[in-house]
Image (cartoon, rainbow, N blue to C red; front, side):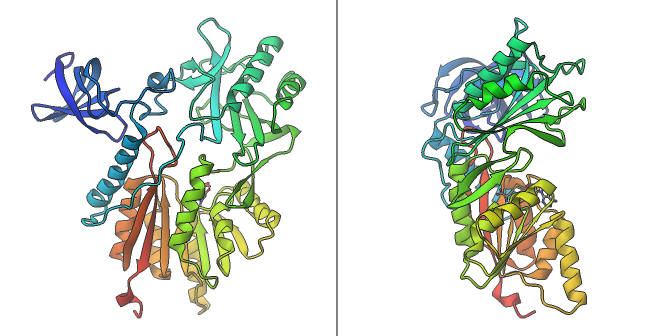
Length: 462
Ligand code: SAH
């Protein structure tokens, strides 16, 4: 089989990146834009020894699981890899991904995840959006997204997994740019001003934050931007973020408030949170409530426990659990997030939560070592971890195995590193008791999972 040859294939599976998988003479082909259940004519674009990549040429028989994509640019954007697949089939794909990673990477032969918790309306869920700014084909300022694997801007103001307010904000910013002549940033030359438009919205409060990322110390005609944006319903915070680096990192370190507060508020499970432009906040608030309920169930708190919430962000899980625990400690590396977490404890009148700034893999081993030297017991009945995609890291896992909490609740946004870390914990005397995916990232291939590990009884006395 060679490049440019055409074949007829039946798509029998979905790949990790969302492409369709089909076989020709035992050779696996990854077919972009094909979905499971399609029969199609495809053209090979690249061939490796045992597999190849192909493009969809002709849809001979469309899959019964095909859905009409809501977004007119979903193929170019590539952010929603599964938009052409019916939602129930998206959920099936994620369920299978978790089961397969647990088996293949974790070696958990007989463990199956509990049914994934889907979203009732899997659209308009993202509470955060970051639109790059550039020029359209006619040279007018435009905002949208980068075409897949490039930095060419495809104008789009109507992302269907984002909120309707995004469009109003983009309209306002772009029209003030046209009126005042404030230029979009140009990556090739490093000139121009506005790089990105960051929008955040409190799903329960309706509060809106706009942060313009600029390649300057000051935003020219700031008063005009403020005038147009502050007129929008729910607007609470308008700021600029200064990023003068020639990199593709979106945000710089400095944020200056132009109007309103330096934060917005939102709530999860009745607890109210203050969110700053630079802090992490789960993007799907509706599903996050379900995820945290699951974490709470897994934690099995009775009121007497000491809980550690590692990678705590602005303290959302810590504060969600604080009412059911004796004491909660949160650990987080981003300074502003720790400040937000402390402020969030105060604003909710929660006195039994304490936040420590630093890397989880440094803070925990240090405190554990200190308690041992002083001959004190280390209080940790439940440890919750919610690391970034790369997972926990060996050192933290080993410290957890020495501390030996009765329960470990692992929240993960990557089933592969989850399976890897669970294997280490289970080899060290824990039993994987429950696992359940929650769909936080509808229309995309990303999967969120919670897992419960229980300390094995036989080793308790060691
Ligand atoms: N549990 C929180 C945040 C999860 S996201 C929530 O549900 O909202 C992961 C968080 O880990 C981010 O806030 C990130 O800043 C933080 N982080 C990344 N690496 C870290 C490390 N090595 N130690 C501690 N925190 C880290």
